[in-house]
Length: 182
Image (cartoon, rainbow, N blue to C red; front, side, top):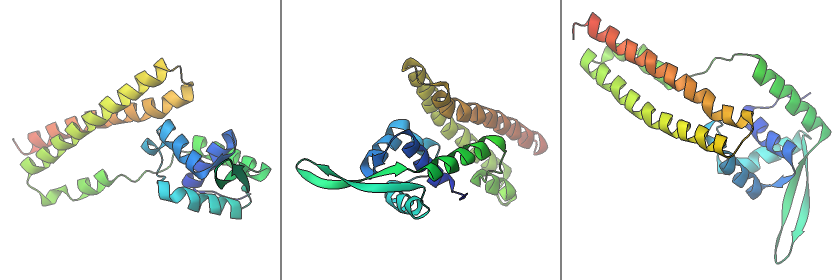
């Protein structure tokens, strides 16, 4: 069975729901707020579709549209469904290392003076607060829309992680102040 990337899985999962054409996929990605939890750009949708078709995970056919050019509609194949199910099992079963650029800053913060490090970390907290407001609003909206629990989880999980991260940063700032007698 083919191994697929996370971006390929994001597109393949949408086709598991229903056959779609490229522009329709873009609208679905926007509607689901997928760019908050995937790295799929508009320009990469067709590239990913071609890769999935080459791997025989999707098939396509031209569909006539009244008064418009025909469009290519993509449908998941049985192999595509099996591959997607395997990918979901893998994604939900293993904790993977996440690379966060913040950690690179931590590794080299010694090149800055402690007051400047604290200022940077306070800026980080401020920017994180904006993201928290967005995620809280998204959770509220999804609940009001009576979205399925797994859709709400796409916003509540990063919200919980971000709140935990902010607490760590606050404690770290206090540790710097204490160690540097600030």
